[in-house]
Image 1: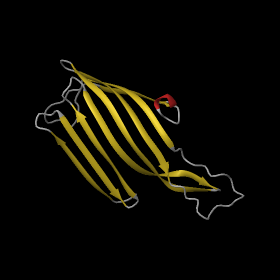
Image 2: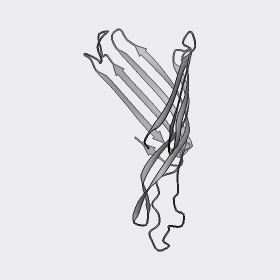
Image 3: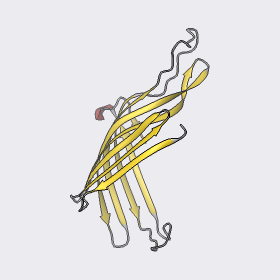
Image 4: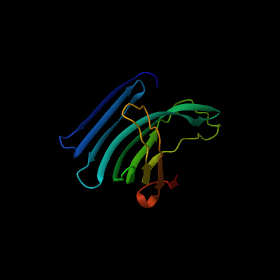
Length: 173
């Protein structure tokens, strides 16, 4: 969208049991932001996040023209994760549930030709998904290194959306 003003904030309590992070990005076409909370006192971490995002799309077709529309997503994510440290490596596993509403502008107005094709719209509606994630790392670096010097880091995740989870669509990736 061009220039943007980004306002981030983070914080923890004195002993590291609670964490907060917030960010708002203000642009000429609107705003997006997120608010995250984490609880780290248990052997696993609990997390909740509220978010709003806004992005331009070029796949709205009206007659023979592709129009730019703004897509908005407002949602909530909750999750649990656990870090499993090793002597010289570490693993983490996580599970989360995300529910968000996807909408977009409908720029029809008076420009519609009644004899043209039906408009092609991007997807919209309620999407609910679960995610399972796993990560492994044995990467090593020195105190003054700018990146890992040796070792490997790998991460995998699987997402699934289904009406049984509260979604209007079925998706897997």
